[in-house]
Length: 458
Image (cartoon, rainbow, N blue to C red; front, side, top):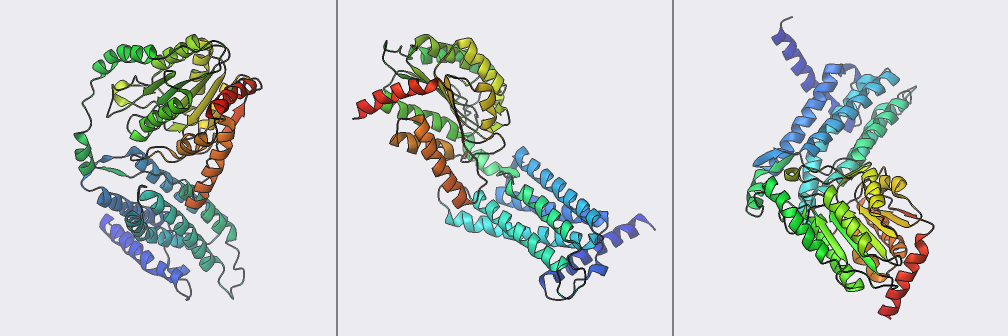
């Protein structure tokens, strides 16, 4: 058979599959003997659905600027997990054709529903990007369709042995749910139109100039760091924004500094930030500046004082992003931070990290004189890191709401955790599980600090 003949037969089988799988939606016998469930046809279903996904994302981002690597990762991950679920499902039952048919249908109907969800949510939402609602809708829709398709295929009334394919159906649903629940909140393409609009606001960054500016910026920041008052418990702070390409992190640092100044007075806070739009407004959050800042805090603090270290950025397990391409920065690991703290001799430290997987920092940073608070568990993501926002979800709950109600970081954590749990439940997001670890010796120091603040408030 010639290549052309094979191609024609392949195309004909593909279109026949698309037509025949519509039987899953109607109360008539499923045409299982007419479905071509060969590996090539299963793979073809994925090519079709991802071609539709690419076209959809190109449409919403048109004119397309460049590819978002996070979006590519999402598509590749969904393909890998989906193909694996079909393969293992076919191995667990003799009815691989039914699995392939259900997969083809549910994937294909996801595309128009995704577009509809984006359009509806985009019109209805204010202040929050439409993709959260879209992805939530897709997750619920896709899981529902997988379940209905599996029941339609494997549990038709009046058929002997109708549950023989149940293990495969459950595996398909579970594998699909795994990536649907954690579907990346990222587009496949950046919009060239939006890039052009933002280009005027972004200065040209010359790496050499950026680094020449750091000593002056850092010196100015440290010159403004006032020493503590002997025998009077006071709070010092170092605040850092790690990811340069979203304004929310610098906004969070600025607003936290304002909150601390109102509650604790001015002159004891160092701000570090990586920013594409304002690259030299503050010293960068890099390893060198962080070490200098920690040492400066240690040199000005007394044994009765407390240091608050707040870092906000994206994160992965055992790494906080210090992403600033022009500066060629390396991420911050728990070992890096622990080493810098030990080298500075900094004691009585409260460490707050707002980032995905930030709970992975706790084990290595834990010490008797430290209170560690993270926005998420080691294996969980946190939310709210989007342009146009003033705070991440954790920053808003902890600093903007809870710390305005109580000066105690521990009580504020409890209050913030309840808020976040409520928000995530309402929005259908997987729980981030904020974490707290209190050393045995930090409590009395914090109690003394909070007693001073409460008496001043009174």
